[in-house]
Length: 403
Length: 145
Image 1: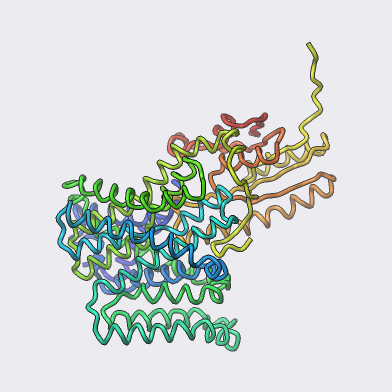
Image 2: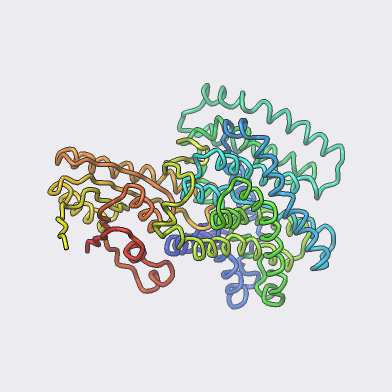
C-alpha cells in the first residue's frame, strides 16, 4: 500500500504527463487526462500494484468530486445573461430539441437494442444527451459566426441543452420525496438571492489577499452540493445553476475566474479526469466493440436529427451545416460526469460505464477529426472562403459574447 | 504580348505566433514593407485545444489574447517609427485556415511565414502550417528560415 504522498506524487506525475501530451498533440487536457488515467490503470494494475491507481481512495474521491463541481460551476458562469434574455425562446426550443432527441433516442437504443435495464438506459440517455458549449463556440469563432444573431442563439441553446442534462441527472435517479421538495424550494430561494447578495458581499469584503471570493464560491458550491446529496440528487446540478445565476456578476470578474481556473486545472480536474479514465475497463471495451459503435451512432444520429434541421432552417449550406452538426455532437465534461455518477451510485456496471465513457470520448474526437478532414479542406480553398455566406468580421470575443 | 511591371507587394500579411521564427519573419516583412511602402497586416492565431472544453478553452483564449496584445505593442512602435501602415488581428482556429482566410479577406499580395522545425512525428500527426498555406494560398508565399 502506497503512502499518501507517494500516491499523490503518482497522480500529479500522471497529470503532468497528460498535460505534456496535450501540448504536443494539441488536444484538450481533459481528454489527455482521461486517456492517461485509463492507460495508467491498465499498466499499473496489471504489472505493478494491485488496485492500480487506487481511484476510490477517499481523498482522491473528494478532490475529483470537487473538480467536477467547480468545473461545472465555471461552465455555467460562461453564460451571457444579456444574450440569454433576448434569445431565450429560440434558445429554449433548439436547446430542448438538442437535449430530448439524444436523451430519448439513446435511452431507447440502450434499452431495446443493447437490452440494458431501464435505469442504466436512462443514464445512457443522460450521458449522451450533452453538447459542448466550448466546441460550438470554438467553431463559431473560427467561422466568424459568433457575432451573428444565429450564432448567439445556438450558443444560448447549448446552455439549455446542458441544463437539460444536468437537471435530468439531478432529478431522474432519486425518488421524489419531501427532501426533494425542500431542495427545490431552498435552491430557488438561493438562486434568486445570489445575484444581488454576491456583488454586494464582494464589494464590501472582497479584493483582499485572503481570497474571500474563492472561499465564498466554494462554500456555496459545497453547501448546495451537500443539500443536493441529502435530497438524493447530484452536486453538479446546483453548481451549474449557481454558475448560471452568477454569470452576470462573478462570471465577469476575470481575475476571480482566473484564480478559480488555477485551482481547478492545477489541482482538481486532473484528479477528476484521471479518475474517470481509470475506471474505464479496456478488456470490456475490447470484448464488445459493437456496443461502442452502436452508442456512438445513436448519439450522432439523434443529434443530427435534431440539430441539422435547425441549422438548415437558417439556410447554411451542406458543409457548414454538417460541420455544425458534428461539432454539436460532442460533450466531454458532462458526459463523463453523468457516467461517473451512474457508476458511483451503482446504476451502471463498470462495463456499461466503459462503453459510455468510450462513446463520450469517441463523440468528442471523431466528429472533430471528420469535420476537420472532410470539411476543413473546402474552407481552406480560397473560392470556398470567398463564397461563404454572411461573412462577418473576425472579431475577438469570449464565451460571454463580449466583442 | 505585353509585359507586366512589378510594383512591389502592396499588402503584406505576416503570420505571427510570438516565436523566434515568427519574429524573424516579421522583421523581414517590416523591412520589405518599409522599402516598398506596403501596408502590413499581422495576424496571430489562437489555436483552441481539440475537443475544446469550456473552462480550458476560455483560459486559452484569454491567455492568447493577452500574450499577443503584449507582443503587438513593440511591433506597432516599430511600424510607427518606420511610417508603415499596420493592422493587427487576433483570430481563433486552425492556423493555416485562418491565415488563408485572412489573406483572402484583405486581398494580400504576399504572405510571410516563419519556418518552424517540426519533428517527423509532429508533421505526420498534425501537418505543417506553412506547407498547407503554401499549397492553398492565392498569392505568393515567403517562408523565412
